[in-house]
Image (cartoon, rainbow, N blue to C red; front, side):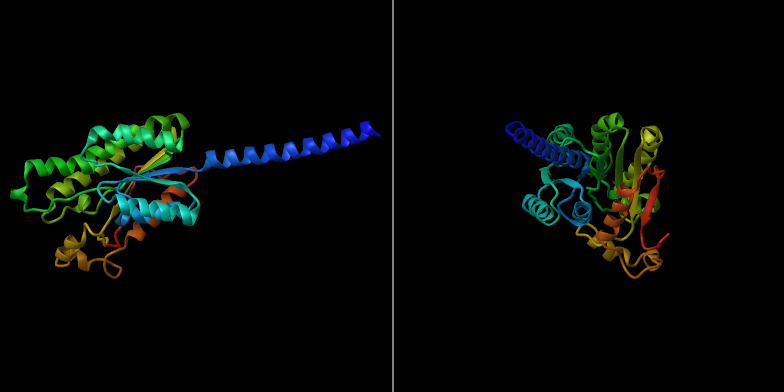
Length: 277
């Protein structure tokens, strides 16, 4: 009788161990399958909308900010509380190119991997063409084109090894059509578009998709003055929908590209412009 009882207890114990092992394994698998997105300029505007939208989709978030530390950390706290995903904020001035590899390495160590890169941060310096200052030109190109290239270079090696990855570069309609007083900004975004297309051709066989989203007139702090001035531009009247777009319109397009499975969409310029073209 004692032997029978011991056998029964052992069976129950083994069953409990089996349940705990399955729970542990499933939890680890779920953690390893959770994607991580790095979003530059995620502390406000379009970047904030992207961070909140991807967080709501169950994606872990790493955002960079230049100077708005309190805002970025508050956004992360709200995303974590509301959506139960991990979200951290990292200070990174994209004008300081030498810091990019270290920050990416820090994020990879903290999250384990970066599956999605959103090059969103950008600056502009709007002046008449003959007044473009060389130092301003170089700064705009550095932040809007060179920094995204370096960020792509930093994440691509692991994406290649994993044969999986999504890179989305936020350009601008100005990079395709040009814009009054926006010579340096337009040139930098045109460079980003071509950079995207070239990289997409190289890494498509590794199952890495690299696309551009080209917003039109979107209401943000950076674009407020531009939109005010461009309302006199004939193209503004050509918007098929009413008025300028919202950051959420861009974020929804980002989410769409991030959620495509076995995607056959790469090297494309996807316009979020209210039908202006």
